[in-house]
Image (cartoon, rainbow over all chains, first blue to last red):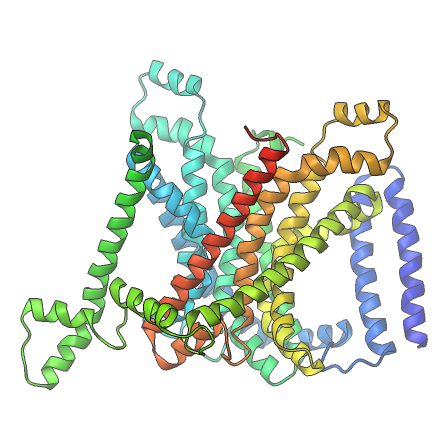
Length: 279
Length: 291
């Protein structure tokens, strides 16, 4: 009971500090500090409740034992990370987004294709494509190739729709200017079409980072070699060693956030001219 | 009529093309098996026999579209709805988890969004985490939730609904926060001029203004919710539901069953999104936001 009380006391104190900070003057420091304090408070509350109410570690391991497990099984986690993220998700992401980009550029030349493919692309983007995973595992085998294939299919349509929309995002006046200059198709594409499409393309790329990781992990639930994040999660859940599952989820969260952050940073460098990047 | 063809023509062409590609791929992928079988029986097949054989295999690598359609017809129309082989029965199990989770997720998402809009401290502490959580592959948690809740004694509909809730919750928070903040300064000033309290300006200005945003995120939310329910059905050991049909099909190599479950899930997703789109149009028209 002591632990629960302490945790709640900590929570109240942190709550008061956060309210005070949030209603005070806004600086760069408070913008980082407030969410950090919130996150730390959640962890402390979690730890306190698990100890205080003596919740079985089989149901909910405390953060400290997850951290311990994380630090002691780094080689396994690294192996899983390489298998799922680098081999499965990343290669699928590159192939899928690349193919969708090229398709979009090709489709953009024909109004007929655009009107035909866009509704289908929008429709497919809303479907539970992850269900294709068992079929692709059957076709491409248990190793990373099938995971990459799932990722390719998952990211293709959101990327296609975004790129096609982006390539249409030029003003008539800009197009007229290009005509005035007597620009060829390629000049138009390189100097006007692609730069104008960049915000949309990066929007698609950002959505696809999460989809890629989800696709690679869930595809492993349908069969995989004896490493990989999805494999580890499903087998360790079966063995009820939940601290390992949580450690694996931490890896997934870190990888997902870092992946998204990297793409967002590249976006910032490429589309510095766009209003949303100019504060 | 010409307007209809102008819009539907290209789409129909594409769909026909896709079906054509599907048939072609089915022939190409299933050919090896047909050839092997013929070689073992010491026969040689002519091309037309080969093509005919690729269309009627029992466990083809890629079933031809008409095989899938026939399987769907057999398992929906011909089977009793209560039968465990009925796709409607499995679909209903998935649908009920989806809808329950979606309802939870929507309620929770709207409440959290209201909290974020009205409390500065909550905005500053919760919002960054909500955005970060969008970048995390949440679906990976699904098996754990199922097993843990099962250990506590909660099983059946609820664990799947929780996963659905988790997935549909984030788009709704983000969309609702945007929507509740959509009224511009002039409109807020107007409310103040009329001496409207916080509650009045919420019910009369912020909430109505947020409706288009809400419906946009509801559409994303329900699609995510269905994915959550399907993935939630995987670790339960393939008992019931569309996800279980997928898993059982992949265990036993029943490709036709996988494809029919997949098409069923796709139809379900499309009709759910279309239903929300319909409600959106009716609501917005009644509110005068859509001509």
